[in-house]
Length: 429
Image (cartoon, rainbow, N blue to C red; front, side, top):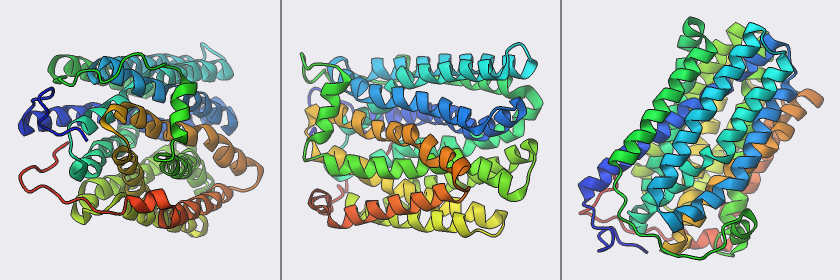
């Protein structure tokens, strides 16, 4: 694997820590923009008088493009470098958030009919899914380039914790400021924040890793074929299953809370914001505190995480009150934090340095798979069968992931715990 002091990448540990912190802050800003939608969209849909299925359409279109393009952007980062793709993705995310804000404002003010406003917001999320998806795999590959195998899972866990922290801040900020400055004003502020991050990456992120391979075909079909590589297939299947549980929970939770508690849209925004914030805090705790303390293998993280996701979703199904709902979502999110870091680290360790961008693109694309299917497994089942059905299905999927983590030979091969270097501590944050 690529050593941290390769002559082609002569950055010091201090320089790497500064670079990882900058990446962490920028990814956290994008997570704020993403997570606020899960608190804002359900009440906004109820305000505009549109059915839940149209909210699912927004998620589906965005997820389809995110799924299709993430492997492409990951492969392009192998060819052209990590920093240009990170900057491009952040700038695209900023623009998409601005367009979404305009669509929401036009719908609320009556300038556009509700379905037309939803269509405008869906187009904005398509811009994010198609172009903004460049950031995640490129940033993940950037970290993989600069960490030894012994550090990789922990370093990637710390990086992905940026999404958890942003997921704490996003719903909390939405609950605090939407009533004061409106949905559009809040989203414009997020757009400006992410744009500032793109400028900071362009000016301050060191990029000393040369492109590793030229001439590889860059199209989704070629990149997805890489997922069938025996080294990666088990991690990809597991990742898709666990991301589907998380996406389904995120999309259904706000509606579930409003209907269980018979809350108004305004009350639902506040209650869902608290629940989403608590869940994100549990995810951060898993990735920034528990994983460094455990110092265990990807397989253990995958098995333990999937087991906790099973327990969390069962709790959501049987929860008798709001406190129990919040607790169930916290357990679910804590388990997902362990699981995500496990399969991401396992996939990175399974491939060569020249393949880090492609592997990062595929592991990132598993989120797109989850959000692509979740409107069916989550919102459609919520409407067509019962509000509890999505969470029962999540328990079954997580149980499948638990069995795969225990029994699949490729995952079991990742059970060898690498020794931590004493003279070099991982420091993405």
